[in-house]
Each structure stands twice: as C-alpha cells, then as structure tokens.
Length: 170
Image 1 (cartoon, rainbow, N blue to C red):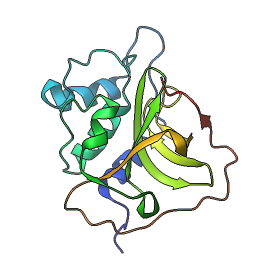
Image 2: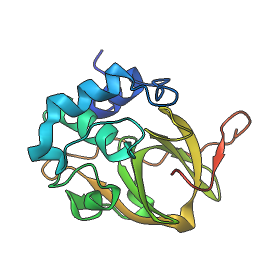
Image 3: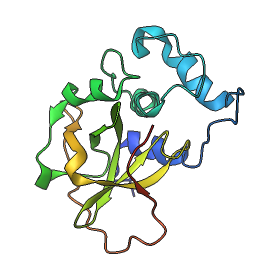
Image 4: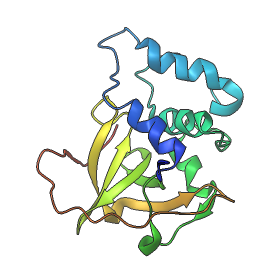
C-alpha cells in the first residue's frame, strides 16, 4: 500500500523533534540543510541556527521531495506566492501555510485543524520541529505545489491536549 501523504510531509515528519543547539552552538542537522540548499535557494548565507529557520525547514522538505522552493526560501513570506493557492475549505495534509507574526512571518505544513487553529508541523516552533496550533486568523496564504494533485482533504481535529498553542514563532 502506498502512502497517500505527500513526500514532502513525510520528509517533514522524519525531522520532528529536531532542535536548535543552545547558545552559540549550532545543530549540525539544521546547518546541513542550509549547506545542501545553498545561498542560491535560501537567498542568504545561512550561518547559525539562531537565524529564523522555518523557511529553511520547509525548503528542505520540499527539495527532498523534488519540489523547487521559491526564491529566498529562508523568508517565510516568500512562500505566500509560491505554488498554487488553496481555498480554506480545500486544505490537505502537506499544504504550505504562511502566517503573520510580530516582526515577520512563519511557514509550516498543514496537518489538521480544529475550530479556531491550524495544526502546523513546522520548524523553529519553540526552537524545534513540532506540531503547534496557530490561530487561523493569522494565516495569510495556503499554498500547494503547481501540477501536483491534492489527494486528501481537510483533517478535523477534535483533540488538542498536548499540542502547544503558538502565538509568536520568533
């Protein structure tokens, strides 16, 4: 039986739990993602995991699945015009969600939703890769790779216990 979930979401799930290194140290896994993608994809020389890395995480997962990230992929809001738009009622696991936050943006993958929040698998959420609940009203874009069929549909979550509530992913 084949996995109906998109390859980039499978790649993202495999990184769940990856954490920034404390202090001036850098996690070699995160730095390896930046090295593999390079400045041409990221748009910057990425030299520390203390630099916001949600866009780096999404770009890494997409590249591992054979998808081309947007220019300056390290910037969360660069994902807002990437791929094709998805309607709110047509979301599917693996959709790229872009959010507003104080001082910038945030990007991650849709894994589900409850009445008021999206459940987002993302990087740099509490300095790690995890699933967090992010208020739907903060979402500014819902995207999907062009030319790739959307095979699943919205996932309604009834349990929220244990899923951190996020208000600022800086």
